[in-house]
Image 1 (cartoon, rainbow, N blue to C red):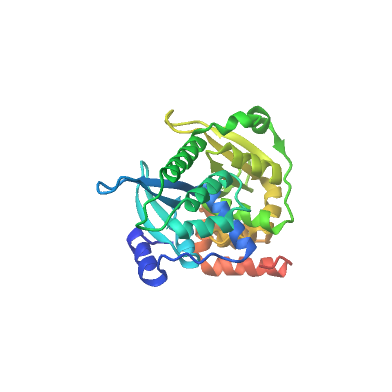
Image 2: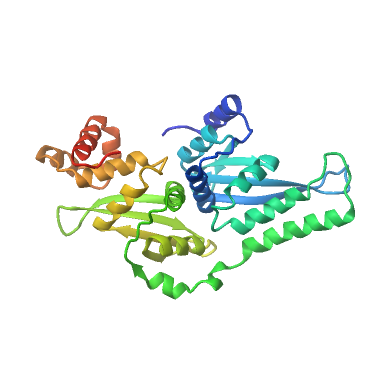
Length: 326
């Protein structure tokens, strides 16, 4: 999808507005919770005007991604505002909801959040202490607001690894377990759409291809949740810059990954076509002509398939004939 920040902001401002439309579908809320836990930030912005003696506090919910697809989906389906900028490496898209909009959405997402559940609770507390505009509040309320703000700051700097047996988590290679609960599948699909990567590469030792699903994040609690509910293997990635947080990678690969892809493809809203192409490529019997045509794209066959609609359609049609329907 080729869309820049300016275009996306224009779509939001003139077509969808900034009022948040909170979904009522449980699976969609779980999906958004996965995006928030994987790529989101819950923050309280404090500001003191030179003309006022008391501070104002603004609740913010932000989801950032270097890929515009999740941001555009949120704009079209939920609302909110969009901005962007360039981080240390590449262009980043930011989706934002503020104040009462953030409160309403977080209240709906609260039962589904895992990593940022406690942060959402604190965010709702600051909204409960918000008074009427233009009405001065007593000192007790001011102190309570500052206490809530400090609580959120403290929660964000706590090293969550002290509560987790890191050695056991990193050394375990659990068998894949695919839940049947639709909420858990939708939540994982949200994480995968925001933080996941689907590899399809040629084996070094032979002509066959290897499929691997990865999820990368700096929060060990998210890795622990995925490992507990889906199995797989968690590893720590080497840091290019020692100032960066440790980054963890969850992965599952080989034939067993197809069962997981079949289970989450209907919940994945951003990478569904990529999943379909991988399933079609792996589960269908390709003709020799198709195999030869894919040899030159052995490291990026998914992109090739998605750009070749005829080949993609024929593979997915063959997959349907084989009994796998989308």
